[in-house]
Amino acid sequence: MSRPATVVRRVEDEAGRQRAYAIRTEVFVEEQAVPLELELDEHDPTADHVLAYDGDEPVGTGRLVLEDGGGVAHLGRIAVRAGARGRGVGVALITALEQLGRERGAGTSLLGAQVQALGFYERLGYVAEGPEFDDAGIAHRWMRKAL
Image 1 (cartoon, helix red, strand yellow):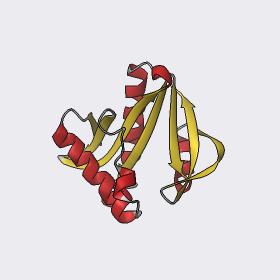
Image 2 (cartoon, one colour):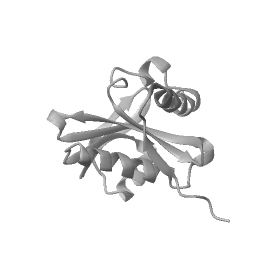
Image 3 (tube, one colour):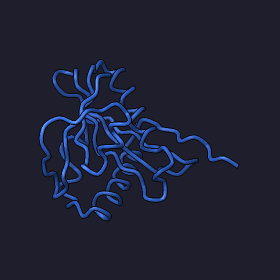
Image 4 (spheres, one colour):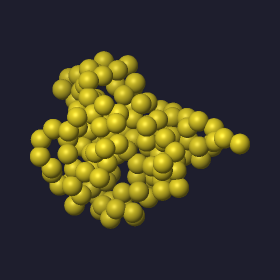
């Protein structure tokens, strides 16, 4: 029997934001040792957050912050629980966030990718730009894609 497709929903309330924060804490703070005070930031209260579900279980999250007067959709905090990796959850999250960016009027998507994930984003059409930079002790590169 095949698994049901991942469903991505926009977070509409505080309970949803807390579920998103819990996934980010699990992935970034617990797995990758990012300090909690760096993980949760000033953009969280106003960002658009999404949750990916496997059935009723939230398994991934991401957020969108509009920049440059709304023309750039800055995607970030893309996190998938360890047990759900390799099943298309990340692709579903990025696809949903890009669509949300287009709906908000953005023409470009920008994200800071962990270096080990560059290939994942390249397969989705993102192009790396600029040198590597450190974010919370993890090497990243900026990546951009036209929406």
